Image 1 (cartoon, helix red, strand yellow):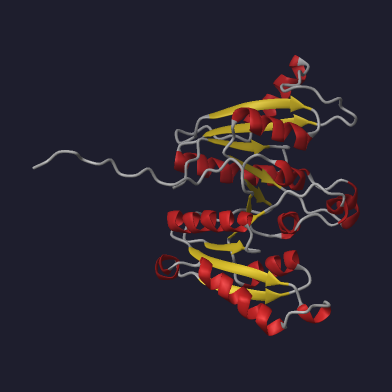
Image 2 (cartoon, rainbow, N blue to C red):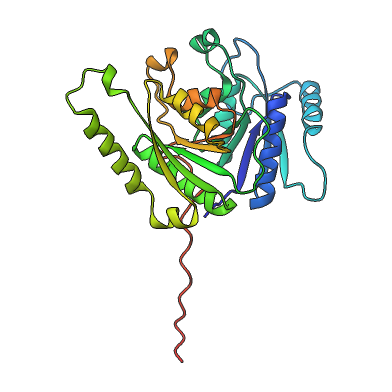
Length: 301
């Protein structure tokens, strides 16, 4: 079941943040969650400090008023709180999420060029890397909550299995269709001992083993195998061809120097996907939990 109590929207006062705000508001209404709207004013060279970072009262009041213009005020508006911080955006977002025990972060993301990513990456991708809870990133106008096609990209790891649990539950909740995709590295371009056909058979077996009879019968679930040297590009291309409304995938949050140059598959998908992307990591704070068992009756007739 979905147990959303607190949703965070980092808002930079831009268009994609506004779309993320609409998406988060719809989720908060649906699940009765409190909505935190956070703006981080960035200053280059800001000295790290404990949360909250104090602002000039006049600046803080101005930023709160600007944030208020992006929030809804009708009767169906969920409980929401506006927050302003000063510092490095991705660091303050992560600190805030940890301090507030946030269940889900919903944020806009901007596709950037190769040079910018090689130097520093985007705020959204840095948050995806280190956040203590699942994250939905939004680039364009998000899907309506009406029979969405949900794609789970898997590498057969623990994080991917967690992503499948999320994808399955979301499909059940919204009456959607579930698709499972694995991208296998092209064996003909690598020095490998194993037979390519054997690798493909094994991958297809792992895909089929992860889909239950209920997935097939009630969610119209299907499994696909793609072969590519660029898994992220293959996932994004597949999502476009299959008219996917929502991508779910696991991320490992690597911290090595390697990520400075190439990043993770999840971060690349976040950067380029045209539909919302939910990234989850295992273990982390999760908003999909097992349903409580029905209470037993000890009454005897």
